[in-house]
Length: 132
Image (cartoon, rainbow, N blue to C red):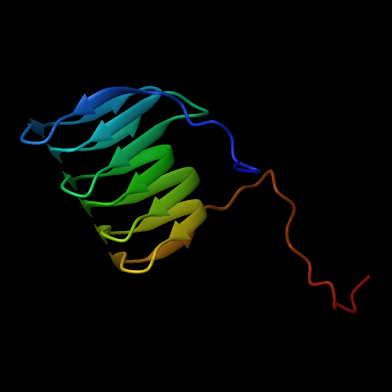
């Protein structure tokens, strides 16, 4: 059982191994990439959406979705609105923005990690602070 995790949206689209897509890919719900995309990969719906970039996959362009799982190569910025999972074979070159980050040993990032700033969440205050 997984506690604290919402059910992932179904994967309705697949870019298979050996397939090369030139240009942007827009999707709703879930997308799995086993091939190569030379262009941006963008979720078109707000809320729950998922992109999985498998071990043999390569994306050259921006990747943006709520839940992003990377086990392949991304050459470009990555933005995950809820959870970013970097699996052991993940290779990311670019700025990585995330709400929550799960990074496995072996994953590599050549760029910057930047947490998303959520204006809806209260600012953190240190418990030991003397300010009242």
